[in-house]
Length: 396
Image 1 (spheres, rainbow, N blue to C red):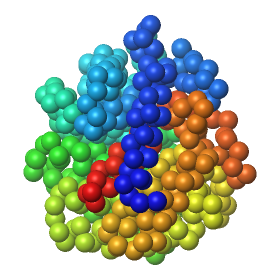
Image 2: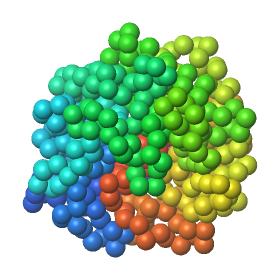
Image 3: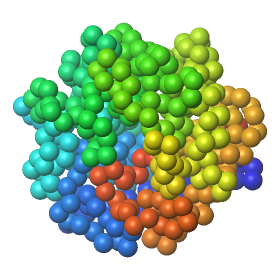
């Protein structure tokens, strides 16, 4: 399969399957809001809450897609996500966005989880890039200021996990029930890195530049374990390590997000340092996390491998391996990217109902998880398609 054919496959997957599904099935025209939960069988739950992660990811995806294909439905979906975020998620008293709201607009959980606040910055920046909406840019910058005021750790560096609605300390820092209740996590830092990278594209401010570079340094000096090649997932406030979990999806995702951040900063030495640092991560991802069938395992905790293949690590594998090929010119990475994409086509894409399943188990049977929910949005798979279209276009 040549790159031209591969690019066409990603274009078709993005427009005909992923975005078409979300535009037709997830937006409820009778209520002017999104369905917060849809099962694999297509059952829709009108009363399911909307999460900030879900809604900001919709905003980012359709804004980004509009920049590739400026169509009315993509603008409509982005505009509606922006409206819902500002009308129901935005905290008029304290600033920032709530963690979740009910479909009628009433808050369900008012906490300020900085993972979600970061996605808000990420999405607002993309909305500005797509539609030149100055209000979105101003809110993104104000959110950056709030993050620096309340999340940034002046003593040890990095960012804490969460605050209460009014930006005070909370007794529950967890991003989800399965996460450790600690002050700092790789996952939150990864998506603040992603958010600040996009913000810097529209806000060439000295502080934004400084904090983005500092985030890259945190990954290089604190989060990336250079001995094992894995990212460390959980930390105390002073960066004391609190976990022994290897998350293969996050490992491969971080390799290309770190490269992207360094490239946006445009500092040659930093770009070279990042490209060198991720080599071991790529090696151990292939050696430990990649199955013979081309699927990427979810994670390994306390020596136990969780043998299932969730949708998002598969998407990140395609981009991560392709990025590795672009850097190294080693064709094995191009072949791995193609193999990951083939695994997705064979096992993850719902060819009948549209969109992607949550994943498959060790026997490659579809998992009974929701197709749409607070964590399952068109972001990982949509972003994969757009990244691959953009990257392959450079070879045209």
